[in-house]
Image (cartoon, rainbow, N blue to C red; front, side, top):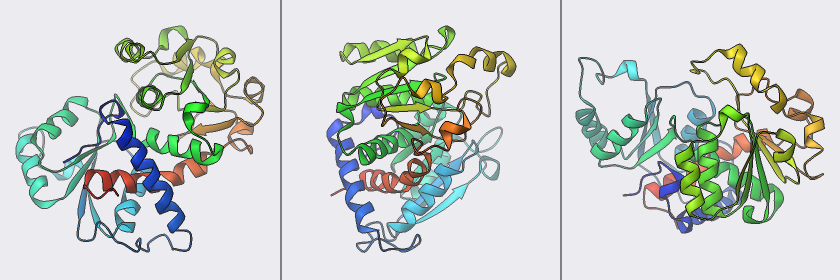
Length: 309
């Protein structure tokens, strides 16, 4: 049984197998409609149970379509529909029920400890659909999108992240170690990435650079990533935080520091961190990025269900 919780913990050979499978399956679906199943229906009869403790659009839709195209089905639960929690059923008992009824469990949570607890009690694969510390399905899909557009290994590219240090960046740092690419991070002084994660990356002798200047991070970039500065549950002084990121807005002037064929990616939803002229430009590939979530998550499901070719 294989979980998909953090990119740090998954062997690079498995990550590459997931991406190779994605490429084959996406190509094979060119003439199929969105709800038509893949011809081999590898997950026929399988049920993926999903639970969302945080709002979701792309993750919810993409996992629904991913399991559907593989021949299986999905059931989506809300926390307030379960006995789990205050005065109700224990997490351990909930996990045992999920393991009895479902073949896999995808959790999108605002609690890292809950993710670890479910991992300990489930007897079916667990997929991290997003947690405070990481967003592995998003970032692996982003790696696929970059390689699809650039037609070369991401290890040969200069990747830049400009914006807040959050769960997506944490997974991108892990990806930079696994896939061996240069990562330049541009963020304000008080918003550097987690020290423990950077220390882990340094032990692997990887090329990760921190700049408190957006233009320096963007120099020679093949890809520029960003994410929303103010997330839905951000318990901070929003006005103050936005003012601290004024010099880190991705605009046309900043994009000129990157290579001419640099692309812009954003996991969405967006805020004021990117100028509309960049967001709707030819360099922006955010819609393909979002669509590819379906294709990559299909291969993640096959990996977790032991069906990866």
